[in-house]
Amino acid sequence: MSKLPMTSVESIITHCAHWGYDEHQYFGYRVFEELVGHETLTGLTALSTLGRRLPSNELGVLDDAATALTLADPRIWPLKLTRTVASYGGSLAGISAGLLAQEDARIGPWAVQRSAELLARWQSAASAAGASLESTVGEYLATHPFVWGFGTPYRVRDERLVAFEQRIRLRERDGLTFWRLFQDVARIVHLTRKVPANMGMAVAAAFLDLGIRPEEMGVIVTALISHMFMANGVEGTQDAPAVLRCLPVSALRYTGCAPRQSPASRADCGSEQTGRAVTVTE
Amino acid sequence: MTSSSGPTGGPLETAKFPDQLLARVVTPGDEPRVHGYDVQSDLVHHYDLVALTILYLTGELPEPKAAAAVRAALVFISPISVAHASVHAAVLARLCGSPPSAVFGVAAVGVAEQSRFELDAFSDLFEWLKHPTREYPDAQRCTTDAQRQEAERLRRALPAGYELEILNHAPTCMALTLAILQQAGLRRREQFEAVLALARLPSALAEAFAERAVNFSDYPINLPPIEYRAPDVQTPNDQR
Image 1 (tube, rainbow over the protein chains, first blue to last red):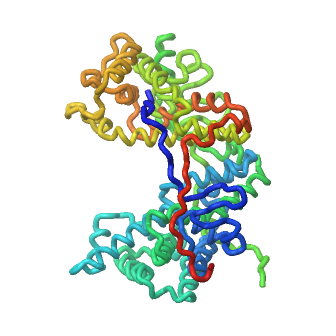
Image 2 (tube, rainbow over the protein chains, first blue to last red; image 1 turned 135 degrees about the vertical axis):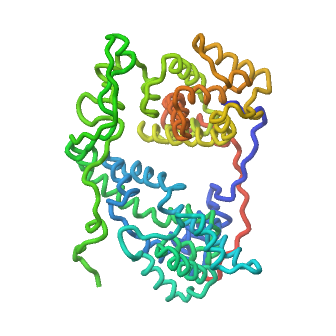
């Protein structure tokens, strides 16, 4: 049923890498000659996800974001997911599962990407003649109950944003276009909804000011937070707690359908018994 | 200065959360029930894995004819060859000498991605299935003899007396398959993606397990050819 193309095999062009004899290529750079001893892990992360190197002051913003984003409590949903899979003994299985669940999810790196898309859209609208930021954001709020980059569950403010904001000020990047736009939007949204901005919106603004495009945000932010998945994948494997591999019955509550007899079984014995939703605590 | 003092509390200690995990489909513990049906005393005597899959995903057992039609459709869509990226990736995992569970994981991700990707081309059909009195989408009709013959082979495999409105519109084999799944109770996109991926997983795994670990010399590493072209680079001033 899955049709195969009848065309000839075409070449794929890569800008990523080439394996040579004495030297390798990576995004236009000679690995041993130009990268070894000259580039950092954060720099490689930028080069790998953006296809370009960033100067060290801009890499510092990535480092600030990665460190301020370090909220690796194993109870947090994607990290707990990592732990549950790692509890069978495979660190990378847990880490891969956690990272896999990030793509296009409602929380995590793709929330930064959606926040960046909003900021970019509002920046374009604000640049257009005759439109005020208040009216542009107000129109959006009128039709969208949920706003990406806002909301701080279980606390009154996002402590990561507070720390990151300080670093942006110290780097004197708080006067840049998207950071100022973020501050203005945060004020408007807070006035209307009484909801504070979160770290996702701040990272989006700072990264837009680095020239990172919204569609590049999801992957680079995933790379910058991958250490938290590693931490939980590694410790989760070392611990491999039996209680995470299988919870005791007392920790579970069945809320599904009540016992019932299948139609085929009923036809066999001529009886009838139908199910209904129940809540049973075991 | 470093700090070794422990935390004094945080949002997850303060906020209220439930203390039990909800089970909504399978009863935990011995003698499991699926959506209320006893697996070991009832379902095992009357239903196969295809019917059980529909039950898991929809909450209801399919009618016998609908289950038979799904069985035929899933047999049709099950084989995917190594030409496809999902299977190719699983074979590569095997070549790397990865353990079977990792090969399984790669194959599962691959077929799930393939299903998602392929179903993107059927949004017009899903709309039509919700509103079958509307005009049938042309893109989901057979246009070649090979397509017509394939769809006819699936139609012949359906149980006698099995009726579907879509059969009046010369559907492609995949369009007919999706209509059969809908008739059996599937409604949500995620349910269709899951069934497609489940049907295809065995062929991806089998192709991978048929390969030998680290058999690199028999693997066509330059298929398809991948040509490196260095991008124009601008090295930041402080890294020259």
